[in-house]
Amino acid sequence: MENPEILLESGTNEFEIMEFTVAGEAFGINVAKVREIMMACPVKPMQKAQKDIEGIFKSRDMVITVIDLASYLNLGPSQNPARDIYIITNFNNTNFAFHVHQVVGITRLSWEQIKKPDRIIYGGDEGVATGIADFAGHLVTILDFEKIVSDISPELGIQYEDLKALGPRQRSDKPILLAEDSMLLSRMVTESLRRAGYVNLVRTNNGQEAWSFLQEAKASGDPIEEHVCCVVTDIEMPLMDGHHLTKLIKEDAVLRTLPVILFSSLINDEMRRKGEQVGADAQISKPEIAHLVTLIDRLIAK
Image 1: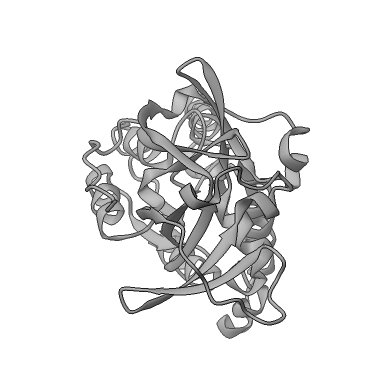
Image 2 (image 1 turned 30 degrees about the vertical axis):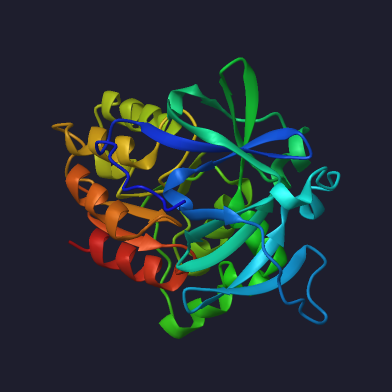
């Protein structure tokens, strides 16, 4: 099944979730990450591969790595392997196949319906649950696929070493507002920006928290640049996504001059058009941390 074109209007705070099961438990993935779904097929095992990697297969001239979600999540095996499914994804400019046991369907939701999981669910702050959706009479756990890939292939995550190419850096006290729901990525981005000299950082867990901070800053009566000089935001987050946050900022008479950078695994052609429609000043795919720093340098220097 090919992924249909995403027709959601930009900045509405809506998204489409593909629900699937592993060992009878319900999970979800943002449809924007899905290229296609297909029946599971034989793969070529890779010697000395991480235990959760089943192997590789070729699809349309691409060699794709298969990750066994049941193994990664320490869940039971499939009861009907002949009916298992591969979800082929594209994010962070890479392709992976996630081996699941059943695909249930696609549902349109608002990010307001997505709640941050309790710390005890799937590993707490270091876990792989970014949100819990309550719909159709049951709970669906939205997985942090970026963290799963980073755990299995650390070289695909944020690399602090890339910052060395920027050369000597000066300390900057200009305040940067970060909206990122993944605790792991939030810490890594924060550490990267501090290494690059940006020491005045405000971390929020989603667009709603970031918007509340901006409203408080505006209500203080101080020049807004005393509280925020640049906003760096993920796109998919519980309560309020990055596109809706950007749209609110750019429609606000006081805040509209704030530069907004969308820093997300979802920056593809379709998402780039959506970001442009809501007024984002720049868009960059994770994990290009050095590029993010140079964008901040340029935008706050204006």
